[in-house]
Image (cartoon, rainbow, N blue to C red; front, side, top):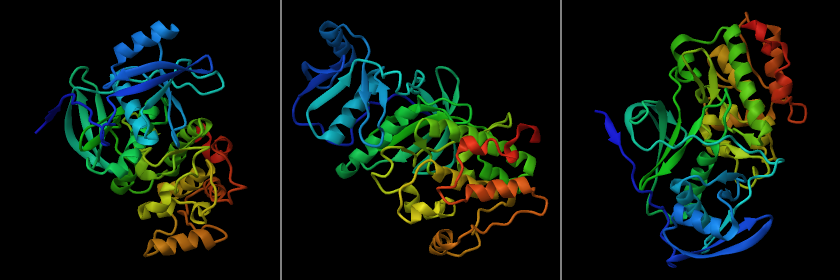
Length: 385
């Protein structure tokens, strides 16, 4: 039975600060200036009026803390509520700092965000991704179809509040990232017991599902998909984003024959990427796609995604990643770290271009090519379609 989902008040996971007011400060022309103490809950229309009266500005921005390390616009009440929760959860202080100047030209400014769905119908279960179940949904106001990932929350878990707030902030920031080879995010909404993440609907399912049903890809199709994924990685890496979970299950297909990178639950931003334990190391299911430098505890960068892509291309062509025949994750980890050359086999029909491409993806990190460089390989030439 279809379930109509209407807008619901967004309740913070962490308890309200005891003080009924919050001190608001604004950075204007590079100077931190005091706006005043305003009553909670902070309402966007009233805040905009006060900001305009005090500084003559009509736009608000907020710098995300820690791993987010980006600037997002505050466009509606939902954005302001999210910013308030993040400030409370991360800093534990009764003060909010806003930016009144847009990011400088040297700092990437994403495109304007798409509105977060509010009135929609939740339909069938599409599957389970990292951290939650994914459903097909229809917007009741526009008729647009989209996907919704549901992450279950524990309302009483105050210790997990900062982590949930960081996850929410990440998906709100991702809604501004637009590229033809990256699944589009439309923001998220926190409810008392769940976090709903809204994203583009891909009607072809994952490449993993396709391979499970139809067998390994023909090389001509594997080349096409690889080129599309590399285009997406080139864009993400150029914006200092490392996906951290490239695999067939996270590459989605549409009916037009294109693929896009999906599931950014584990993604990190360069510059803050080593501040917390690398997400791959906590997921045994992903051990086949984890580069050796991660298992060694070394610092990593965007080239970690390239190693994962190599394992993914092996999966394209053979139905399985390297070392799939080993019976436990510890054995896989040992072989990835200790083998001087990653052991993989390809069908007899596979080209030398395919073998060279994969081998270079598995190169030592200092010799591993970038997405930009790999797009120049013969394996990725467009005429191979």
